[in-house]
Figure 1: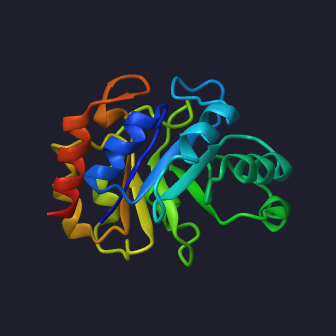
Figure 2: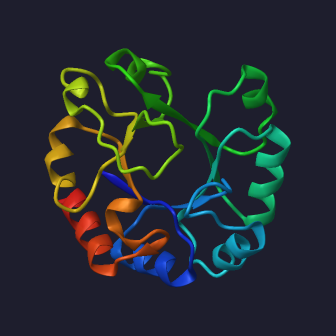
Figure 3: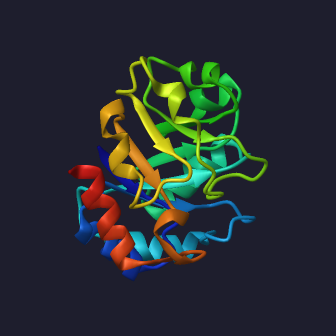
Length: 195
């Protein structure tokens, strides 16, 4: 499974994740998040990173212009949209993007079946709540285009292998505190996901 380490707030944490084998890093441009990074700060981290690592910019309730300009300025390679956006917004995006499904039911995870998508447990807050989704919803369906998020950590990620997810996304499950990664947890998470 591909691994994304989200909520990166420092160059040190970015490199810990990359050296442990992360495929993607997530940068949160949502001011209410404890993992929020400013555009200048994210840019200063991303410009020092090695190539071949996806740099994902996370957005909540913003317009296409904000997404396009932020991604261009910081050097993000993918936009992750944590909100239900109108079709017009997707058409206006100049950057590759992935939709996030905040699932309340099994039917929700079947949305956008022909697209790669991120599926997270529904909660009032956006992202990083560490709430676990009902894993039984994924029995007997094609999960090859799903990136699973929500309540994941080094102790439970290996149990997901049988479901055939494209990838997993973790933030709070590998932290010492909000926005500060625990190097050992990051290493263990990626190792257990790739076993």
